[in-house]
Length: 321
Image (cartoon, rainbow, N blue to C red; front, side, top):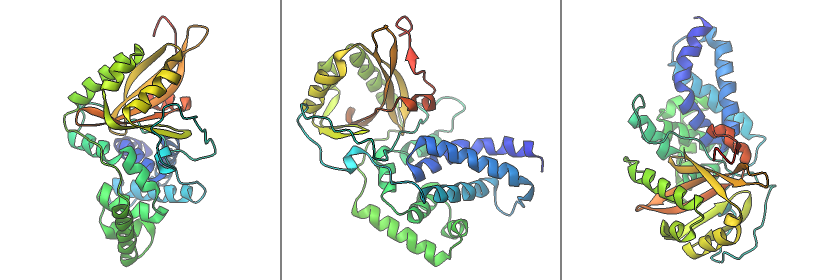
């Protein structure tokens, strides 16, 4: 079969393979690299593809094993909330932890438009929630792989066993242990609504208040027990007052701008701070998780290198901003 056929057929699976590799690895950069490796391996071996399974199944097998190989040399990725307890004092000194392997966000489609599959988008949004992906990272690599293949992607246990080259009984045992581990320490639940309109409106109000540095309006959008995390800073806050103090003391000391995004199934923003030359430079990707029409969690990824993954510029001129 011609390689051109493979390229055309495999491209339709790229987004779900990216989500799968991201759930396995917790890093959008690593996931993109592994998807590229998967497609390259698939392209090179396509003439040997015998069609006994679907192309999708074959690609998932390649991707899963590539992720397992990568996980032998990487550390578990975490969020600040996975390392210690929160503080309710916005004046607390910030402790950087650059040596930690941090979880990073994944770009996901926003409100469903024409030519998008609403069911597929719903699965992608619910299956890439930050708390859920962070919970996956706590599992040993093979348990993680089996849980994702069976409970998230929907493969049969027998298929998953074949992917990993193990017996069905061994695969079933890995799945049971993974499910038990998640049940013992379940991820926080956030709201993934079938109708994104309220989240769109909440994001619009957040960005307007953010660019105006209006901490009162921002605070009105937060739930009482909101949490606020800022990897690679290990310090994290809980409570509306603590978050507002942090904004007042540290965030709005210079003009800021923001662009709307969607990440991990939630509204998000690319934020910029203004330098002495008037240009606005990449500052962070913020993910806003919601519950009951208010923001329940803000995760501020202070990694400007993430901006290209989201298709947004690193710099905005003063005039453009």
